[in-house]
Length: 455
Image (cartoon, rainbow, N blue to C red):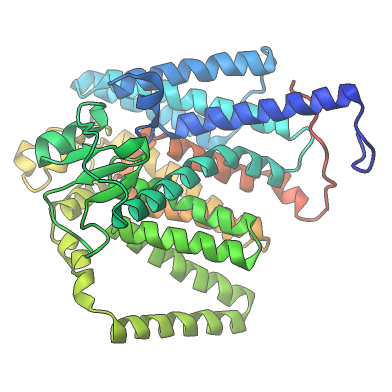
């Protein structure tokens, strides 16, 4: 091991540079995998219109990178969630095949996500040779943090430029750039613009949610809907607050995220944040009654100030959304996951079931097999979350809220979450944070090491 107070010789410098390059490439590939979740980024990179082709390309990139990076010296994946995910995915493919509800798309999702999980596991095992679990988690998080930060900065910058009149939000129409836009363009008549390729701007005929923040359309960063933007960026908030201890940086991060929340005006986002806040109150009670009283008092004061000083009509969108088709969509996806009618069911990636209000035309159901498997999977996740909640270190708390927000917000799409690389990423981080190695480190201090090798 090289001591930090000793200068590196020429060979060590080369090894160190090689290690940094490898770490950047690792983060870039994780970034690319996660960008397939409702983001325009892979469409820009590959110039491909079809999402399934993109997923296949990235799946093969994962395999090639694993073989190149580790030279066939692979560790077998030993995570219960990974094994169960494969079983659920195979069950979905079989169900979709016999009911003709998109077996090929289910197969593509399984291929891409399994290759991503294997990639994450190999990177973790490699990092763990010279780093503790905490540093492994933060290293794996770097690609995701970059994706979230890029989106938050993009929204903040373009929103400011639009409001100051420096750029027009309605330039560079990109409706035909990606199949990601097809449903909203064809069914809802929405228009997508990409001014100077800095951020997508959605011009919607569905009205303004909060005056001033959507007067010129929805600024979306690199995601296709306000809900998708919030879904993919807000879990990173808790990791960023953990990594940045200084008050100035925390205030800056919270301010940017507050702006994004107002620009999105996503009901699911706001509801998920409120739930996380309530969970934090429970967490603070466990730690210190004084902290609980302080936080509760601050929340009460903020709510009182909002009620007394703000025109509450600006939040009417929240109640309007509860009666809208979006609310019906969310209810349908949740009900679908818990109302099996046949043994095998059909593909739970097929969204025909959103017409729940007309059950006579609904041609899909989750099936008892997938229903039970999903309950087991969610049960394991719940147990892992419970274990994290009772840990006392700051990283466990950060990962708990990172995962809690994701699972709360993902109720909008329910079992469609299994198709998302972000779902895979959250489950993997959750498994690491509750691993035996992590538990062992709670009772000992591990000295930092320098990772100077790439293999």
